[in-house]
Image (cartoon, rainbow, N blue to C red):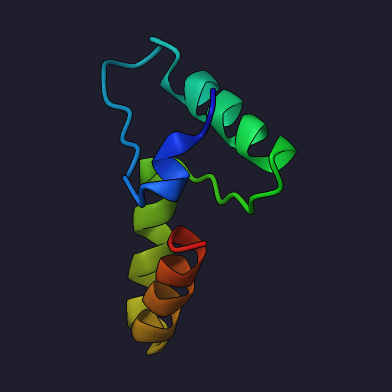
Length: 74
């Protein structure tokens, strides 16, 4: 829980079957990052994909991606 991945700009991906604790683990990692002063964005895959699809349909896809990338680079 050092959050070393943040300083190394390394992505974190959790994958696995439903009900195995992926979201719980991601939220715990995010909570630790917040405690260390970092900003965190959490979304399930389905929420993220729907959000990006809506952004594409409304013509703000690039702006949305830039916002996500800025959050990821913090």
